[in-house]
Length: 168
Image (cartoon, rainbow, N blue to C red):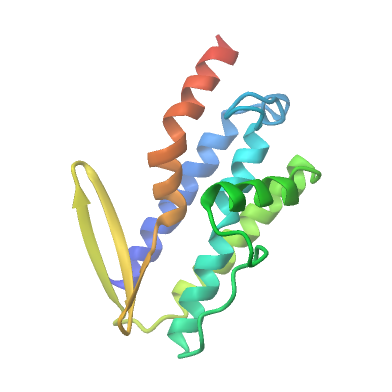
């Protein structure tokens, strides 16, 4: 895969993501119960909450800069702690704000990928039917589709099951 193909793949995944979200009414977006007390709005914030960290790490590696600090407080070390911080950071925001910010986060990520050299090394890994793409910058590798991989692998089945229950 080359950079242009990766960009096309990312844009297509985002188009599918937006189509998925379009299936969910605004009222349902804010209804708790998707994952514990979390609403779909909270899930969107969670799914996109790690993306700025990946974006800044790729950008730093591309320009030979030191690894940036994470956006969450340094004492937070576990996924559960970081997820709780993301939840608390975003829960007071409106649905519109969360959706707008998730769109902005994705556009910033695309810009960073677009700014990489055309000959950037992109590795394709297959696990069963799933395909994962890794961007190599020097001796560092980054999961190019982490945002979508996380959604598909860790949350999509549960969200679809929740939607079937509340819509049925």
